[in-house]
Length: 274
Image (tube, rainbow, N blue to C red; front, top):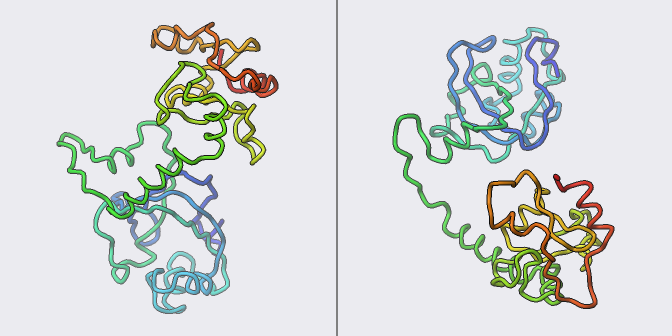
């Protein structure tokens, strides 16, 4: 999207990409940028000066249409109230430092630079308390009430998930790959990944210990047509306890229910990495 025909542009991106705010000088980026913080891309849409003020009010940093219009015209003198401007919405915004007073920041001072972070995420490391050549920062407890609610929700999710309960009633407290386990460690795994409510069929499910569930979902473990465990060659030499599962019969004690052959075929052909 071009800002009123000027060279200031913004681009579409996929949800979840991290973004950072940087301070810039009037008329474009300066060589010295100051990072204000970061967030996750949530949405992109085109708006106008009138629309921006209607949606965000003083959060734009300007009190009137005239002031905001003047700021845009510093980029493009021909910019009008109905000219289109790209508007990026960020979620979970976190400041690197105390929030900047909007009364002290104008449009000339802010822009959004897009970065796609795949590995060795410096933002995650910063939030995680790591600093270059200095000790890790002190962890400060987050909202205690929100944390208590999260614990409560987790207990409900672990104990009352209908699909998990269905599998427990069918197979007992037994991991299909490693045998009897504490009930609290067992999770309901979909053989064909979840698509809709009909995916929660007893024959499309396995009870798996939490770590085994992850390996199964990643395609590092599967079951063959004879319900024997197959271990991906990608795990070769990495964990003897996992490698020893290869070729062993699955623990499926039910005499009336067996996993769907079609679902297992799908997992082997579409997910499992040989």
